[in-house]
Length: 245
Ligand code: 13P
Image (tube, rainbow, N blue to C red; front, top):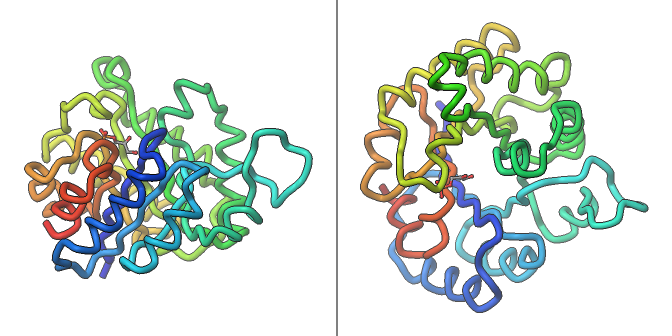
């Protein structure tokens, strides 16, 4: 049985007072879930969020990880700092880092290796752009993103390796993938990681304009084990609705 995950990626949003309000409100709303719940605040808010998240039974994730424990790496955050702040999961390969920062495949691969070595729950993001979908390249794109990071590079238990399928055209656009589109991609990923690596028990999340009114149509599908949510994770009410859905 794959335990479902609802994860919130706050990106570059939520200041101190909003972080505090989020957890106060989230804790006050009635809980009804067996799901694993994770939130990824921006780095400066991990400490504040971590203490409050624990009281709500929420695990703390970081939005990235520099693949070194510590040292002379200006502007980077490594594993020792994240562990010190109570972070248990890391998001690697988010499309905003791939496309805005042009993060290269070999750096993403090194982060994937290091995150596992350091014992973090890896949340590894993949997804095609609109142009790649329209040109029929999407399965090749996913295969490259996954194999370049995973070939001879998986060491953690399958339950500590989660993939988030996030079509770039669905992120922050309000255009959610249809259940058919999402399931096609999820079953492709499941087959790939099962046949190539024996990681069929890893969870595969969908991300991209997930909202309380569309989550059930996605999460009820065979190969969708939860959601990685941006905009709708910023406020307690909508995030609680997603967690309880
Ligand atoms: P939205 O839910 O805002 O589309 O963002 C999805 C995402 O990128 C989560 O990592």
